[in-house]
Amino acid sequence: MDLVELLDFAESSGPGAAAGWALDEAAARECASQRDSIRLVGLLHRQGEWARAQAALVLARACAGAVEALAGGEGGVCPPRSLVAEAALICGVTQWEANQLARVGRAGLTEPTLGRALAQGRVSVGCADSVRRAAERLDDPTDRGRVVGLGLRLAGGGHCRPRVEEACEALAADLHPEGFSGAHEVAFAERCVWYRPRAAGMALVTLFGAADQLRAAMEAAGSSASPVGENDHRTADQRLYDAMVERLVGAEPAGGDPARWQVLVRLDAATLLGLDERPGLIPGVGPVSAEVGRLIARDATWRGLLTDPGSGRPVWLSERAYPPGAVLGRARGDGTQRARPPDDDDDGGGPGGSGVGRGGGPSGCGPPNGCGPPNGCGPRLAGPGGSGVGRGGGPSGCGPPNGCGPRVAGPGRGGTGLGGTASGGVFGPARSWPVETASADSYLPGSRLRLLLAVRQPRCANPACGQPSRRCEVDHIRPFDRSRAAADQTVASNLQHLNKACHQLKTRWGWRYVRDVDTGVTTITTPLGFDYRVPPCRLD
Image 1 (spheres, one colour):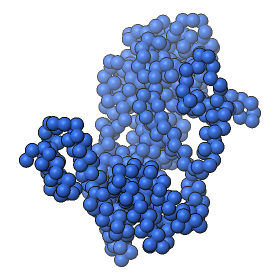
Image 2: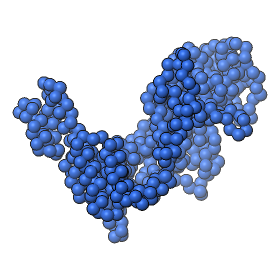
Image 3: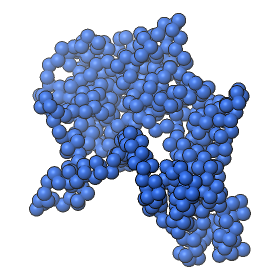
Image 4: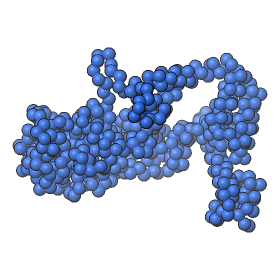
């Protein structure tokens, strides 16, 4: 069969195994015309959406079976929540996407018309979800059928999801105005904000709330935007964005002090000093440009962090924070050093630690007041604060054996900056690293241990969950035993961040987490016997 015959066969047979064979053959061939290329793209997309729809129906049937089994008192049955979480892991999608599959599949089982359209590949999972939401607000089966029929006609006619959703919502509101009002009240109670990191140091903020209020907010920001000047080449969207950010971030509180916020940034010391342009990193968000990192560095607090250059895992975290002015002034030699008394919780270090050790760095790179290691073994690079340890190490286990000083000291506005690895040096096994044995004297970790966890694991330990660590709970991998000393259990190697829902899966539904201390790899074993290996996050 030639290409056109394969495409005709796939189109006439509809999505399924036969069409999959034909499309696989067609995709391996060179398309003779642009028309054939676009036709093949459309058929492949329909086949893919059909496969997603089948997955949604299978998942929904499995969840329905679990509900019946649990209601009948059967033991050893995973609940629907656990099944959906398993589906997210095995499909490599987020739990939100897996939940969407389950919802659409359930709607396909209860609405025969929608179920047939999904089975035949006549509607995408996204459009089916929009149709489902509008139809579920109606009690009358006839009215629901009208909404479903409208959505399927529009989806089959090539209309995109926003158009399908708008039309179905409008019809549902006309058919049952009181139901729409009630749905609005329920939806308004779920108003929230989502933050999603994007490439190139950008992010996407989504506000879910009342349409009239959000539109009014945009209009207010637009009216307050500065007028276009002679040399202002910003677009209307850029001016609106600048105005909204200024209203949100630049406002002063009632007390009159400038607004401040906290963000954690890792920045290479060479970049901080202007010797390199390596991007910084906001844990759980993504990279930021070197210029932005240096801008944040001017008004922040720094803390030294030492990581293994091979694995990128943390090996040491300073207990002492440093102001940027004093350390940058010493590193740059501009005479702006400010005297500062030593802290009570200093990690130790010998007197005069501002000398340069074997690794060598700019003169005076170490911290003032004897905060550096003994014997003049200062940091190999000009890491602000100089709190890393050169060859020979410092007292109290402040640095790894044969190690070197920190390479990074990235600050956060009102928060804490952290350092990264220095080149060279061979570290001992992971179990001997100070941060792996860093512990607390109670069930809850202290501030230093929480900071280490936030840097080491910026998101939930479940790879299908994208929740940042600040919105997660701290979980003991090996359950906390109150008959044992807390210092042996509330330890870095036994702690992880878990979203509340993922935490409940572990504590209530048999999900098991095991961490290999030597490699940092966490193995997740689900109730159905699937194993997922999650490597540690690199910090360099």
